[in-house]
Each structure stands twice: as structure tokens, then as C-alpha cells.
Amino acid sequence: MSGHSHWATIKHKKGAADAKKGKLFSKIARLIILAARQGGGDPKMNLKLQYALDEARAANMPKDNVERAIKRGTGELEGVTYEEVTYEGYGPGGVAFLVEALTDNKNRSAAEIRKIFEGTGGNLGTTGSVRRLFDRKGLIRVPAAGVSEDQLMSDVLDAGGDNLEKTGDAFEITTAAADYDKVKKAIEAKKYKIESSELAMIPSMSVPVDEEIGQKILRLMDGLDDSDDVQKVYANFELPETLLK
Image (cartoon, rainbow, N blue to C red; front, side, top):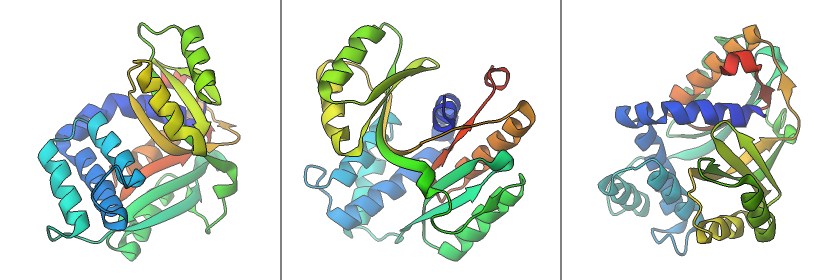
């Protein structure tokens, strides 16, 4: 199980707490603002906005918050201008990290991310230093309760999906980036419940870590996740089962 799968399982459990704090809604609002600014406020004509709204629905983000974010993006309401930036680096144990962020101050953001890495023995790398270890793919999570793995696998393959893997209490479906939207709609049409879906950076190889390194990795992941600027964190670690439990 890759680092992304491990973190997705852990993060799902803390997602409700993040939502209560408003941190999750704030991050999704930034996604919506940027998407609306780049492609307009109609999700039917703006795929990036459609994906951001999918995340808002999955997080039960209030409708008023969503509408305000769209209006800030289209300029109907005054708002902050955010830039997309990706940081690359290595964590403890040589684990590769890709960090996608939205920020209104790139210098402040870079200094903050560097401090988080260094606090756990990691370091930021140069652009391109780890990106080659990841591939952009569609990632769809379906809760496992009441779902036949064989039937879901058949439906996924029929829809053009690449793979199905059980991780914790959910099935993870991966697709080619170009097939993501088609597969997602096919899964929805079969009435499966989708817990989350995204275009993600999936590691092509994983790095097994022991419990000591794993604890440091999780502190690093948690620190990055708590940053207001950070949107997505991808890594190629593989935790020991003792730590997962």
C-alpha cells in the first residue's frame, strides 16, 4: 500500500475534525476561487471547477461558502489572488514528497514548507528532483461496506479503469488521467457511493519504512496538512502494519 493510500486512510478519520475547524473548507475555497478565476464560474464549461465542487460536496461544505468562493474567483466579490506552486523534497528515510499548494505569498509559503521539512529531518529539493517518481492518475475511493469486490472490479474494468485495490475500509480505483472523468461517471451510474475522487500523483515505487521513521513521516505529513497553503501531499512511503494499527 503506497504512502498516498496510507495517508488517505488516516486523513479520512481526521477529516471531520478539520471540517469543524474550518481548515478544510478554507482549502477547498481556494481551489474553487482559482478554478473559477482561470475558467469561469460555470462547472459545465470548467472541468477544474467541477472537480473542486466535487471536493466541496464530499466535505459537506456549506452552499453559501461555495457560492462566495465562485464569486470571488469570477470577480463578483473582492478576494485574494492565489498562485499554484509545487514543492518537491525528501523526508526521513529518503521518502519522496510532492506538495501542491495555493498561496498569495510564494516567499512566505516556501519558508514555511522548508521549516516543516527540516523539523522532521527532511529537506526541500529542486524542481524536478522527485516528480519523475510519480504519475498523474485518477483516484476514486468507494466505501467497501456492502460492496462485492468481484463485481466492482468487473464494473471498473468495463468502464476503462486500470486497477482496484482494497485499502482499509474502502476500495481504491486508479485510472489513466485521460479516463478519470469517464470512469467516475460510470461508477456513479452503477450507484456506487464515491467517498472521494481526484486526479492525484501516484508513486511508481514505494519505500518501506520502519516504525521509527514512520512516526517521523507521519509528523511531517501532519505538519504539511496543517499548513493553510498546502492543498495536496503525495509521498511514496510504505508504513509497517504495526504503525497503522
